[in-house]
Length: 108
Image (cartoon, rainbow, N blue to C red; front, side, top):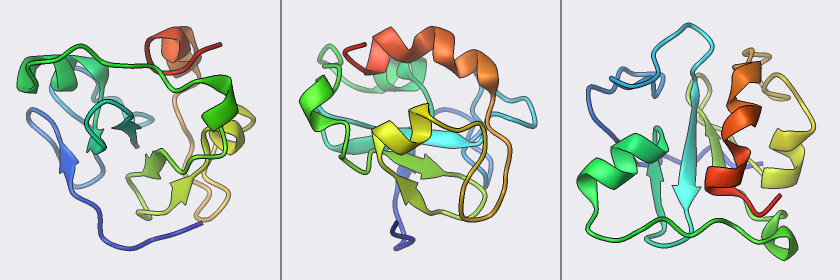
């Protein structure tokens, strides 16, 4: 768990990492993209900002702290993120519908 300051990229970001594409009260995570080592609010923000295709994290990399809670700015491992519905540090609820997008980010 780490809460050093991270730069989150995206379009129309608020201070809890919600973006133009996903902005419900539960959309409070950013994902570090393996391909460019940058945190983005979502895959659409990545694709609209970068000139390369995203590369999903492989299962062998699920210990990587690639998830950022937008509320408390703590990072979580991919594995820990996939096993919870809230931030273990601050209790912020995560959007359960994000699991439908796991194949875009992670080798599941």
